[in-house]
Image (tube, helix red, strand yellow):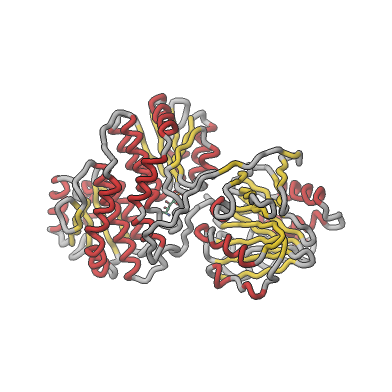
Length: 578
Ligand code: AGP
């Protein structure tokens, strides 16, 4: 789960590489590095920590024709300068950045060491430049030989990877991939081109990209690109235009997470305006044409799917939501099953694998995704966009709201009558009405070690989602559950003053609250008539307004605890490993 970038151009400088890399830091942020290839030498600057502290640009040449850069989320080898990318061969002439995991790296390293190669990191990646060096040893380093070498290296490595390679003396970059994402960006001025893990790194420079498929290899030069298939035959593929909303909202806050929470009314309005009726109609038709629908996703997108399943059930369709990493253990897909992958990033490996498994067993596949041109929409037979725009904070907030709104629209197309036109204004009201109360409450909650959140029906997924946010951002252990389930075990953990947030949607919850209050719990209710107050509305509106309160509570509690809100420890925005 790293971000990789390659730039070829006539005036590539460290600033440009750092700027593009900063746009990918949500993919990983424990270390970072840059290689600048001036033709005569390959200069590398890398280190531990976030990009600005890891890379001292003063140490780099201020101009080159080729640059590689990498922001890391470690899987093999702790975050350190040695383990940061780019990695090189013995001579420091071949530089490589990699996203993914090379599973057979131990065995390859042993063989290479026997041949005299010296390694200086604990990473799996370092075998790649040494394998290239080994194959090129004694050969001309021309384009033909480099491509043949890459083909050979691909045969040797096992795992998931997107790799970009730079060789001293060559004004071009080589890229290849399997399972991890890699795309090419084509600059319209004809003087610069890019490799990247995703379009966001170059979406301020161009709106034209090409997604590479597994098995393909590609090279880019300042003026062009070439793609090759597995047998090194040239492939003719034209760039595609993409549309990607990066508008700055007028709600620029101290953290991206708060800006994105406050942007939700706008994000829903954008969805209502832009979400293609035709595409949504096709998905609704697919749901109708299949006996059952399975929604598969991870984390927050799974919670949106749980609520989605509830809404589709309401509309009379047999639907279940399953965590993507468990799809194979719990679902027997087949022709009668429609599998819908739900994902903000469009790259979550667990979802990619679940969909692959579904397709291999003849299930029709579709997806609901935020980031365009990513693996999931490309690999499914049909896809719907949610138009939330760029979400930078690791915590998913506005994308959850737009995923649920999408499910609400589908259920309406299936015959439900849930008006969501007033949703933006109701979310806005919820924020305005509760923000100050939440700031005070977060001062009380900041020392808590455990928080329980109870819901039922449509607020059960919201209870789970609020719990996830409380774990992820202020690092408080939280459990989100069905109110009715508490008495079957968890009640034993309720002590004097244990905080229990009750998503009180009906009188049944009052009874549960009474029961836990008698055990000493401190009840914090959210309802249409309590201090934490949501507006009256239908179940979707109420659920999403309740969730907004949970988002703000997590945010302000994390602020009270001085947590790194937008970049929580050990996490990354796009989880591209299994
Ligand atoms: C939520 O705040 C997290 N960032 C995480 O749970 C996330 O929702 C999950 O990793 C799935 O990501 P996706 O939506 O990009 O597939």
